[in-house]
Length: 103
Image (cartoon, rainbow, N blue to C red; front, side, top):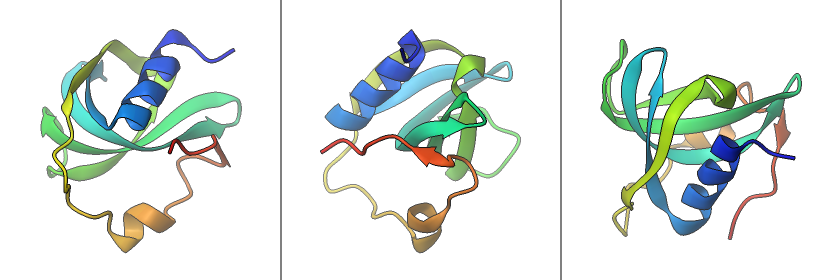
């Protein structure tokens, strides 16, 4: 059964909501692009749009769900939102077994 955090991420994806969470001791605000598994680890491929990061924002991130803490749902993602880039649509190294996309 998926973890509680994974279930919240799935809900955020389905309802088109931002997620607020702590990852590697940094506060993050991101939108879920893809959910699934790699080597039995739950994974979330996301575009981080706010919070703290060692990298440029906005930017693509691969989160191991078990390492996300204080996960909560955020504000609705504005519609229309920026379209996903070709890289965001094609990237597969984060999630090797993709969970069925939400509609």
